[in-house]
Image (tube, rainbow, N blue to C red; front, side, top):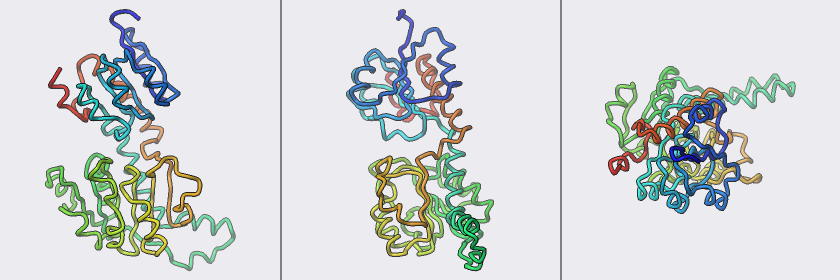
Length: 327
């Protein structure tokens, strides 16, 4: 390796077009990591300048073993699989892909609302099973003029709001970390305490990061406060909606439906108790994985690495910008 080369770890699969950005540079040495065990990564990290990370846990031990590390770039927007405290300690920026996957996550959340409300799977089975009389059950519900609560009004939450406004829904939004005028300007109603309105909402969707404040934020008390006709959707991170509390609510018929793209433990066990309920819709944590979004995320993920190595990071992509002040 020549003096001006940078070793970059690509952990997990990235689109070929994104990897071509590395290939176009003669100062980048790429090492593809498919074995994401702790032992494998600890061996790979020393001497690394940049990391493009899709699916693995990056620990403080790994980070500290790479004194030349200039960036960890997430293929996505969640970063609970990275030791952020260690990155801050070592002065290493953590980047995400910004809006690259926001559209598809928003569309998935709305799809889940619609699928659960319209009971599309049941209707399909009825037609295939020659049960034309199923239509007389009138078991669908509407989105029109119903109240939606969005917890988290960032890139994804705002897109959900815009699309649900087109359904003529009454949209409430809770996000204490932004200027509340942003919510009003979007035609929505700001809510200071999401718990105070749970009894009024017909649909609930969460779009917040996973941290100490948000884990279990929708638990037994919150679900008990909701209407029995309500629909709950989580396309953010597993554990934000307590699964044991969901099981209890569904067992007691307290929810019309639930949509989950994420689980507290992934992949879930084959005998996960929520699988017993027909009014729960699942997806394999793929909200940001449309063909279009996958390419966008890959391109931004790689570009963030290159920008960090070139000393030209886009601050909008940096989770911990304070570390840049130490450079």
